[in-house]
Image 1: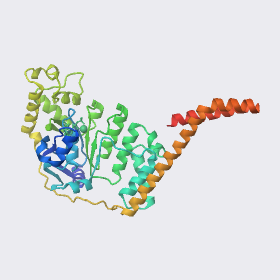
Image 2: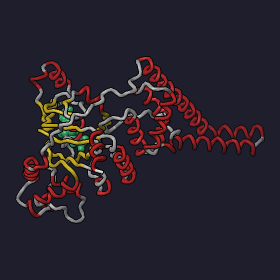
Image 3: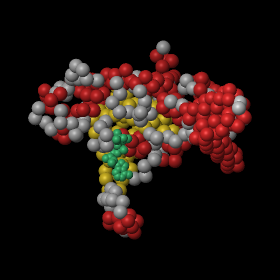
Image 4: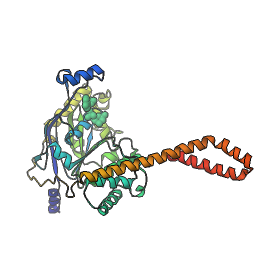
Length: 406
Ligand SMILES: Nc1ncnc2c1ncn2[C@@H]1O[C@H](COP(=O)(O)OP(=O)(O)OP(=O)(O)O)[C@@H](O)[C@H]1O
Ligand SMILES: [Mg+2]
């Protein structure tokens, strides 16, 4: 059993991020003068804003890491920095013991931003086939097989013929996820994949992530998940003001906060309680905890962050076994011509359907506006009242269906 586990571990990957800092130029306004001055004399009119202040940690295949913290804590910035999307950073990110560049990271990982725009006028299956064709150089049959497999894996098989515009929020999130899984990324970065979903849909998305994490390392920013969802994660990273308040397993989190004297009060979810403790704008922090009567939220955050950095939990284990990092996918990327032809196909389908839909909508409005006049005129002239009334009802039904379909 132990040997099997060791083998499983050897097959996986590890990622270590050490002392990460991220800075962005502070935007001082969007007026013409400000923009012009910023552009002409960049350095002089901008100050740097430090968003991440020495964040460290590690994760391995099988880990589903929740990045949580108050709004503005730096969660998206950390995710983007790990994914190699932020240029001005210091510190290192290494995979299997080797420091990776931003280019390598973008090859081995997938980054799903919070608002991912999907083409509304394609169906689920068409979109997955399109994504396969843009990302992999495989035969048509393989693409079909892969898109079916992903639809099944993410519970989209029943709506494979449905237009994306008609999907629910949860289905759209799962479809975005499916398109990112095509290349089997070793590391997945997801920015708030559950935002805007009801608890049940959010639960379904996180359950899917938990299943996928068996073969990948998944980082996922999330806002105050309920206990059911929170307990699906294997690790939690709590950020506050760009610093690590805690990073580790959920069980160790309970122990760590308990060791500082912060026990989650009855009626609070653990995740909600930790975020409350780490929130600078939380006037109730002291009221929820008898141990911090004298400490303001700022001091409390300092205390927690300092305690974590001093604790053994913040130590990063040494990764000695390098393991082979497969950077390019075996299938390779399709050539420019193939990509161009698929893009043309997508634009053509989108335009054709939008145009067709536009015409139908226009005709239906026209008919529903003039039908009273038109049919009463017909029935008077031709004395075919019953026939025209039936036809009138038919047209009204079509028009109302058209309105609902929009
Ligand atoms: N390009 C930028 N220019 C200036 N400030 C920025 C920039 N990007 C981020 N920030 C600031 O850095 C801080 C952290 O931003 P980030 O988006 O990482 O927070 P977050 O934890 O993801 O917040 P939320 O939970 O609201 O999504 C915020 O105060 C934000 O205003
Ligand atoms: Mg964010």
